[in-house]
Amino acid sequence: MPNPFNEPIIEEFRANKGRVGGYFEGARLILLTTTGARTGTPHTTPVGYLPDGDGRVLVIASAGGADRHPHWYTNLLAHPHVTIDSGAFTYEARAVVLQGEERDRAFARAVEADPGWAEYQQKTERVIPVVALHEIAQDGPPNINAGSMGEAIKVVHDAFRRELALIRQEMSAGTSTLGAQLRVNCLTFCQGLHNHHTGEDLGMFPVLADRYPDAAPALARLRHEHERIAELVEELRRTVTAENADPATARAEVERLTAELEAHLTYEEEQLIPLLAAA
Image (cartoon, rainbow, N blue to C red; front, side):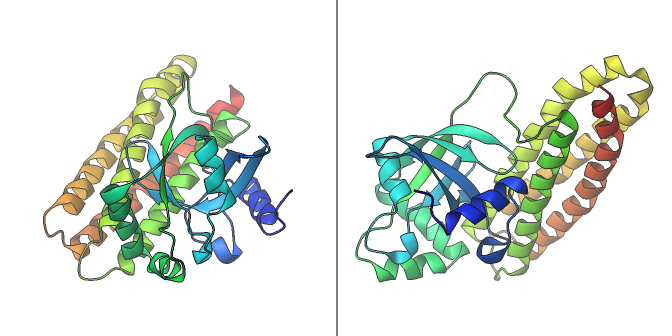
């Protein structure tokens, strides 16, 4: 049976490719589709997540501190194969419940980023589970939630814009130290951006160069910008992984990356979307 609270959020999430307002505005959110433990039917639930790198994200079965696990958690215990909609991408994943020290470290990171998780744990005697969702590799290009290649570029770019805005917000609200989860957020963003640009350099750009020779100057500029952004990404990576990393230095690197990346994304959309629409 559809949940009257979740259904409007799901509809808004899908319509806006991951952007929602209200209670979840500004939160990292995915749509998690599980298979009912008793019914065998699919159930979709909006849940908050934590970036974790290495092709996985973490979700926490808090249920607002209730004494019973949420239904989505009991479903994935019975059927660990799940589907994730991130707004930009839809993909299959394998759910693994973290145990022992690994669970405790992940939960501590979550609490450091948002003390609300600790408040939920205080409300209940159950140990709130932390679940890793491992993306299942597939052949071919990723499944982007878009109806055309031009729209796909905009959807992916907007996802990067939203994540970078969240990281900037977290940097501004930080303390005198750089939190562990914030480090992971930065490193996950850096890896995702690297993968995206590598895919364009090796896949999309050569195809467009063959089809549209007049686009050679724009493609050359975009490749050069990829190299420049890779340098900024590497500098941010070094900054956040340094021992006793300085938050002020990290904020400065994020601002530098934001300025150049936004200009790059805008130029790329101006140049490539018309070409892809014509194709």
